[in-house]
Length: 456
Ligand code: GDP
Image (cartoon, rainbow, N blue to C red; front, side):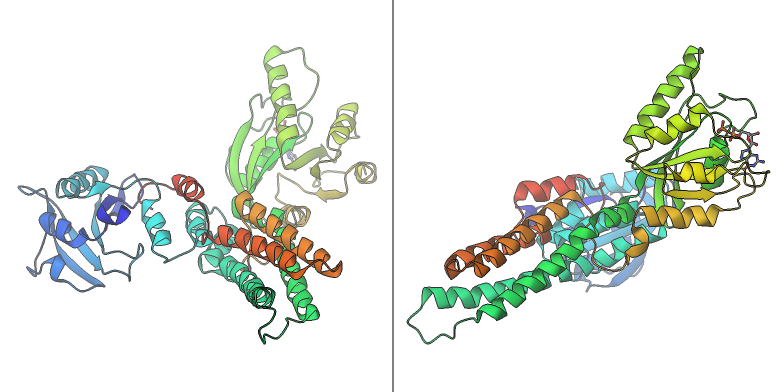
């Protein structure tokens, strides 16, 4: 049904820019755009071959709206796999919206969120892992997340998954032929060959699963919190990592009352970082609310940066903080290393394995902190250009496929009949094909694309 509609939307950001692009996709794309575009060459877009750009004007029938370049792509050699025209105007939102309205009046339908990419998927241009990578690439905040998303877009994950699936499919086909036609002269698939295929598939799936947490961190970053008693330098650390004055720094304890949030990149990883009020008992009701928020943020964060002042002895509040960091992924940041130190490191190490000494004021130790963050989150062991699972759906499909492969191996070793083993292999393949989208249900596909932005 989607083929019948020709869709259009602004494909660039919803704000002013040098250039703004209206993308039109569908079988009537050139015909519709001919109604709003007149090229100086007089050539009709509907007579054009693909990969051609035309300079001209976009108008609403009566009045010129803007000068523009119309680029024609012919199916299947376009982003969506359909005929596509991209009208590049000057990037003012008023002009773009006016031109888009003219395109609608000429016969196009407003595109829904992610509909261009959904069409690319439905037309077999990309699979579901690559479609998801488009959004990951758009949302990438750091070097590693962009590298990982690009690698997935270029097929790193789908070729890994398809490789495993095709090994299993050919094993299953041989097995099926032998099970279904026992009297025919079909060579029995040797058990050790089958086991070898299953073991190899298992290893590859396990590798993907083991890298999931780190991969997800690379792709989407983690929630991290800076905690510590007042005046240890939390806000100074926040500002150092932000590269900007995000939190108020002062020598007066209790200055930061509310949680201050910022997205920063450290060690190639995106941290959704919160600077909190200093955790201490307080009679001040406003400060107490801040302390309560800090405790909640500490509980919810994936990564805790617990800050201590190297120039002071540890206090009861420091020890309470160390206690509450137990069981969390935590780095103890001993700050103010530019001052005379009190040698509290060995005491802190009794509670927290990862300790870094820094000066948030001078920036000394920042690189070591970055390395430590990558190490505790496991991202330093991941090659961002390799196959990475980036979300829970992909993780679930891989885990279930692995379970089926495991069951098939056990069944084979226990002498269970080969047709039963074949059922398990088929289930594993089904999970892998739903990961890549070959067999994903319509609701799953719709759900994935609804998370996209309009125009993508
Ligand atoms: P917070 O209350 O934990 O957020 O602490 P602030 O960041 O507001 O810092 C408290 C005081 O310590 C301020 O006067 C900062 O200038 C000072 N400070 C923070 N970090 C350092 C550091 O690394 N070295 C030195 N010498 N002073 C620091």
